[in-house]
Image (cartoon, rainbow, N blue to C red; front, side, top):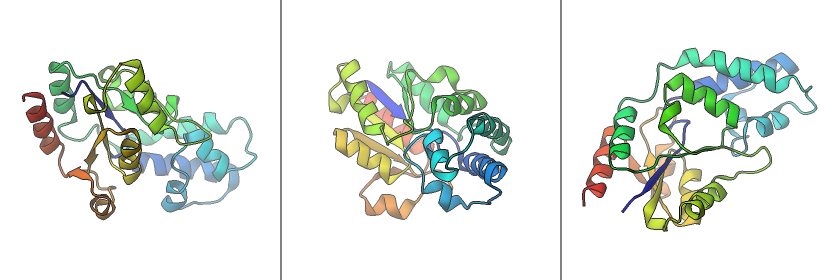
Length: 213
């Protein structure tokens, strides 16, 4: 029986990649004069924003992160809210007494900015965020299992990338692959053998069926 379902943010709760790209592109241009591509930004994923910007703008002044968070907050005008059905999915899980943490590679401040913009601040606890030095999702998932005395079958993760799936496999938990975002690499998920869901509603129904067994 599932007791906890952890959630990714970007591409899972909302289509936030346009926000990410705009904030990083503007910040890098502000400090270097260079205009970087989406692929250049994506290549730095895994660590949090401080680590990403360290790679994109080496030797930047201490004001860089303040500027980034200003740009990041402003870029949320590009999204209207969470994906349709996310609020209902969370409500169903909470009604079944399933805990819903966030486990994300985002930094703590950007994570809170996005959850606030989506109106989801009160829907997740705890909120576990990324590290500037190295990817840490698998470690965070293990910590949740330890802290909550959970067996692998009692914990699952909802994320949109092959990396999320690999982290879950490393820890021994199930990954429900969110394939509903425009940004998703569906062929890569299929090739990796992901348990993928093309709509939020489809996953909600599946989770409800699991919980009602």
